[in-house]
Image (tube, rainbow, N blue to C red; front, top):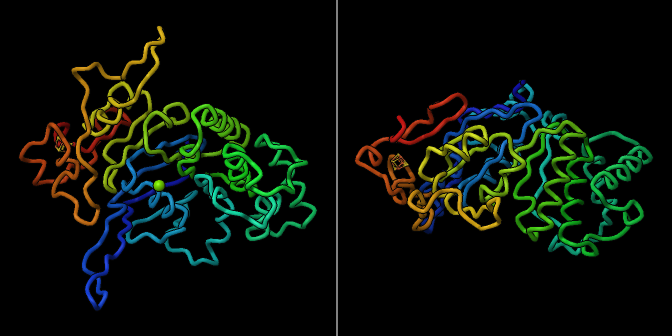
Length: 328
Ligand code: SF4
Ligand code: MG
């Protein structure tokens, strides 16, 4: 199928200021040379620990942040250097669902006003047309139209996430970035919201980038999964290939820590005990990443070459890419 979003060699570096003069003394490489495509109608999951750069990447893709280098093409158009004014035309096609944005907000806006707002900013629809759409989307996300004059704090966490989804979908976007949309919710509510997102995707023909911090959340919703570590993609593959045949030691470590329920109901892990890889130590600072392979400080298989050269992301099997010297 067609490529909807093409990310080409994107970098996002934040300057680090220091000293009395507040001069730039270094750079935090939040996203460091990332390339991938998203196909129309699919869900690409992106997984990484906090600090891996996945949220920054999402924000750069929607131009909520400007890239330091590289290109983002949306529907064949390079949006990475468009002026704010020219970008406005594309805004309504690309939206973001955030993790419970109304949680701490004692908003003076009713949910109807919150959901309507993107239509006011991004379209020229009349008040009447806007209200029709608001009621329609409120019902589509499983809330009741008669509750539209209530305020966000009157809803549960799961319901607020539905409001956030409604607000993202009100402009009929083609592409939606979901930034940990269920991480703050109870597991039982997570499943409901994920099912809703899947149904909405099918009904509305949406393409998703789904950001999460562990592989279990993206397993069911994703078609393909990318694993990020310190600003780089270390593995990307079709989900079946990734979960069955993870090649990168970091992906293997993430998979070994997922509890899975077996057919006989006993809880086991995906990997057998002798294959389990434990992740030790913290994520190194993206301001001062290790030389060569940035995973080497935590990798049980690290060898000499790993400190000397950055492993390139190469295609080992059809559509299955990995960046590790064990596989190059
Ligand atoms: Fe481990 Fe070396 Fe592979 Fe990096 S390149 S993941 S350090 S084996
Ligand atoms: Mg984040």
